[in-house]
Image 1: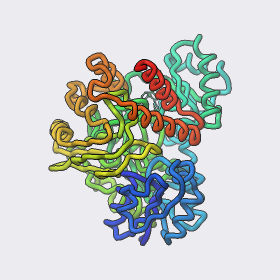
Image 2: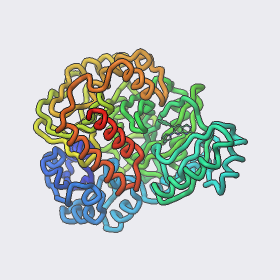
Image 3: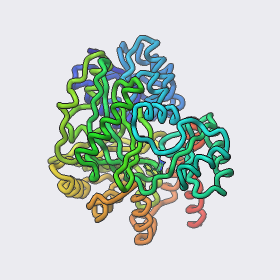
Image 4: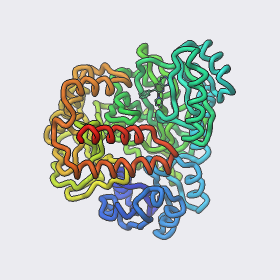
Length: 504
Ligand code: MV4
């Protein structure tokens, strides 16, 4: 087993990984940028190494700095967390080349799954159900029209090197196809450096349900149930649950076995997730694979009683998984809320600043994963996830009631958060009945917007506006560095501009 692990990340996930290290008797090493000098992940580590200026393009994303820090600290392995370099195959290769262990999948499996068309070929070869469409890039708009004619409109054009909701477009009729094809192709080229585009039948009102799995070096691959991830805003998950309200034992087994055969076909090891779309008739279709530990992994841990980060570390060290498929059972229901330093009462504008009062969630059935503390300043430079609030109870209804109780006690001042948004979600009858799809949050927010005018909560001062503007600016430049273009960040800047003009 490793004696020392370098955690190539920050915030709540770095803290969570450090906790797993501690429990296994391993010494955690942190890295930090200028903005993170006083961050919690630095305080909980045994050692912390400064890796440069605040922008992640000059710190958390610089492969040589991360590997240099690991070497300097004497760590034997690197855990990448999620985001940053976690799905960068070049990084995984560089880590292994430098003689360190990468706590994640082999670079080859990562590379394979980063191409959505290769991922579809792999899933098809494994016998998993796919959304009808092509498994190779389209040669022309004419070919797109031909395939669309076969599978039936509406269809979706997707960037082969995209994923996670970027570079996709719905096409509802043949006369839209030529221009949609050219647009998607040129967006794919500028966003991902690859113009390749493929086509899928558009699944209406789907749920997004994913299967967690983990594999070791000995060919054991085990699935740990599903997560219901349909509640998303702008392709960002906001609330996840385990189990899904629509998945029973039989569907879980079929989805789980499909997921394992895809992972096997990809030569997969370590933790990974297979995303499926599930249509209103409960047909499921492979969508893509995430080759990392995911933000929402705690709900799986709460329901299966297994620690995914412990297992990730074990298998990366060459040990077998500590369980077999038949050892896995699920008990009760868990829900996670992603608490962002964003003003959910004001179009989710960023709200960086100092936390001046904090009453963290606690009590029976609560798990609170956070990178923040009282007196800490939420930096403008990174994702604004300040905490994950998870609850567990014997039933889904019990978990929702518990969540309602905890959201009532939880108090944060100094920054605005998404807590009020979740207080409203848990009151919603459709949510309580488990009747929703990926369009739920948009409809829910539209309904709320008609009830409450923006800024109904608190006054936005000129100083607030300056802070918001700088946070949006950093976010937009980070997006430009990382992926050349982020439609959502650009859109938010225009919205802010419009709102400021309105006030004037
Ligand atoms: C789809 C789809 C409907 N049909 N593909 C969005 C994220 C990316 N991973 C795939 N996405 C979708 N792909 C077909 N063929 C609908 C979505 C989609 C979606 C998926 C999961 C969660 C939220 C979503 C919101 C809008 C669209």
